[in-house]
Image 1 (tube, helix red, strand yellow):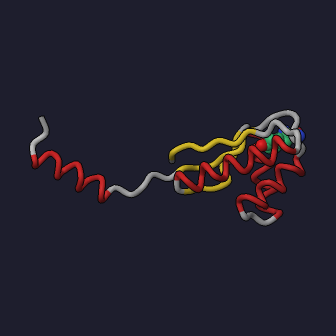
Image 2: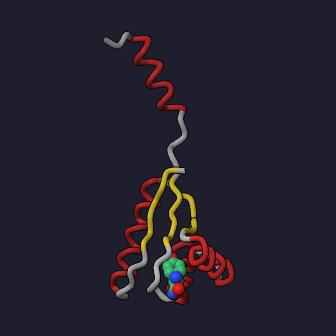
Length: 100
Ligand code: TYC
């Protein structure tokens, strides 16, 4: 059974620990048009066209690319918006979040 001291130690640690951060990344596929991916990165990750193009090309060449790092709620909302937009447009683009 936890003693009062054990419980306080756990609570103190939880209170001091910074909240986890999540990177949101795009995955490569053979079908989503490059221009669509650039537009997605600009719209949902607030990147200028040049930066968005660099990220897209990195995904295209290496398979995966980080678009930003966010709190859990923001990261999961970004993933949901990107996937909804891609499916509505008929593209198989994949977007994932991973704890940093
Ligand atoms: N590989 C795609 C193509 O050649 C482009 C692409 C880039 C797709 C990034 C997905 O996350 C992606 N049209």
